[in-house]
Each structure stands twice: as structure tokens, then as C-alpha cells.
Image (cartoon, one colour):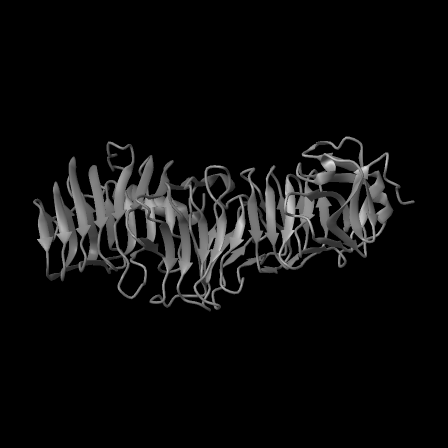
Length: 510
């Protein structure tokens, strides 16, 4: 066992037999606080403690217990203009540490600041079957910044799913410090769900000075889950001061089931130190880079891992999103995980990174340089002005180019520049293959709308080949229409252009 985890587990084991002393303040009926108070220890029993406008409670000692006595239910509500600060080095918000139900509702801005939140093993589930211990209903501040709940460490020892609900515009959990963020123990899961159009937001902001650092998102042997009809956003408002969230657990500990996108925003980085940790599959959406200015440089650092995503789309100003690899071990990013059409739009690539395509769909590619590409399914349709590719491996998938685009293999080493399967789909013809070596045999896939599929004679398609070796080999390639045999269609390259016709009427190049 990780020594750090063992230490935490031991600490909880001790606290489970700890006898609560008399609280400095015991709240046993619904109470609204509108003044500034400070306590060592507060218990809330079968009541709602509301911190209203102008109210602030500072915990300097053990912390706040929801509930403070067995078999009771307690709610802490932080209203707009209220605040709670757990300032002591050991001050903790304990939810369900003593047998009962505990809930936190945040409706204000910048309203919750704690070093540690613990969901105890004595917590009692709600009727929903979850430990619904926090609902964030914050609204955006007038200066346009995120509303936020600050917690350095979240720990759950309850055997089940501890859920945080995001129910409000720009509600966010904010990272503080550099220690790991979520510790699910004892067969536990942290689940984060957006409802009513709210996103699940993890981030840091311009008010936070601990930058250029990394925070592990998950530690322990259990699970991190997203859910709901929502996006998940990792953000950083400090342009030029990179902050990284590290997906550091093993492959089967991340469950991305939110139906929307996963967005890496501004100067924020996602680091993956476990294979297949990024969101993928039909149950979730694509990944996206998003920024608010030319200085925004959202990044995915693959750290020597292999990652599978549905798609990756760069929506930053100036096309500044980056996929990089800080490890000496080669890394791979593969798109097409959900089997449908997808995007691979990326402006910058750094380190030893290979790219791949799987699934039956078409990947629309907008990029300037991809060191290596493997196409194992569907089609890899190059868009944009020019894509330089360091090497190409085709294992059942096709490559195509749209009008005005070039797929350039002229910089690839001999043997890694072989083209063996191309796709010409509706509206996608007109591009150029440059510097490739045409394989001795291969496949040309035409769409059903290609005129040659229905007529006789010969058609010149707006697909060209420039500086390609062995162009005569294309006469040996199989021509298919919509995946089926092309009714005796043949191919040749004439004047650099691809020409398709009936084999009875086509004079092949020799």
C-alpha cells in the first residue's frame, strides 16, 4: 500500500473511535448566522445551519461535524454573501463521521474554503442511494469570474458513491495547494454530476498564486466518475502560468459518463500517467481545447501513455492547443473511440507523439504536423492547407484529402511513406497526396455519388499525386464503391490526377 494512503487510513481508524468532546457550538434547530464568529468545533444536529449575507464562521480547531450526534441529519447552507473558512491546520468538515446524514448546499460566491473534507464511514445514504453530500448552486460573479468552492483534499471512506451535484451557472470546485485532490477509500467512488445545464468545473483562477504546478486528481484504489447531461471543464484563468491536473490512477479507475464534451481551457494541462484514462466511448463526448485569448495554451501531456478519445477539437484563438509528451517513452493519441465521425484538430505537437484512428467513422483532420499516424479503421480525411506526416501505417483504414488540402509524406523515411488505401468521398475530393510511395496493391474507396459508379467511360477525379513514387502501381489497386466491388472499375494516374473508368475502356499505364 502507498505509505501516504496507509497513513490516512490509520488516521481514520483512530478517528472512528475518537470520542467527541463538547462542541464550542451545538446547533440543534434551524439557525441563520449573519455575524463573524470563530470556533474550535461545531456540531449540527437535526438542523440547518445557514451562513447568510455578512455571516462568516471560522473553524480553528477540529472542525465542523454534519451531524454531530448519531442518527440525526444536518445541513450546512452557505448563502450569497456568507462564508466559511476552516483555517486550522487540522480543521476539517466531517460529513457522516458520526452516524447520520450530512449535506452541504452552496448558493453563494467564494463561499467555502477548507483544507480537508471527509465523508466518514458512518455516513448514511440518501433515498437516491448516493451520499449526496454537496450541491453547488453558485452563480457567476459580476466580474465574470467563476464561483467556487475551495477544498484542498476530499476524502471518502463511505462504502458507496459520494456525489457532488453542480446546479448553477459556473459552479466550480477549485484546486488549492499541490497535494492530491480526491481520495476515495474503502471501495468508494467520487461522482460529479451536472444538472439543469450546469457544467462540472475543476479549476484554478487568477486569484490563486500557487501556479506552474501539478495536482493529482485521484489517489487511492477506487473510482472517479462523471455523469449527467453536461460538459466537464478543466480551467485556469492564469494565462502564461500553466497549472496541471494529473490523471494518475490506473486505467479502470476513471469512468467518464457525462454526455457532453471534456474541455481543457486556457493555461490548463491534463497529464495522463495511466493508459486509457481520458474520456472515450459512446457514452460521452469529444475532448476540446478552449481559450479566451491568444495567450491561452491548453495542453494534454500524454507522459508516455496511450490514450483513446472520441475526437479532439481545438477551439482556441490562433489554433494554440497542444498535445505533448514529457516522457522519454513514446506516447500515442488515438481518435474514433465511439465509432462515429470525429475531429482531430490540433495546432501544436511536442515530444514523441504518434496519432491513430480507429472505428468506422471519418476523422476530419486539421493539423500542420503529425509525427506518426496509424489508420486502423474508417477514414482519415485531411482538411486545412497542409499536413506534414512523419510516417504512415495503414491497417484497414483509408486516408483522404479534401479540396485545397495536402497530405505530405515527403519528409518521411523510406518505408514509412507507403500509401495503400485512399478514400474519395462526397465533397472531399480535390486534395493532393505528396511524397508518398504507392504500394504494389491497395484499395480506392469511392462514394456512391462518384459518377463513374453508374456510367461508362472514364472520369478524372480531383485528387492529385505530386512527387509520388511508383504511380504505375495504382493500376493494380482494387476500386470499391460504397465498400463493395466497383463493377470492374480500374484506376490510373494521368497528368498527376486520379482517373477512374471501366477496365474494358481504360488503357492502363505501364
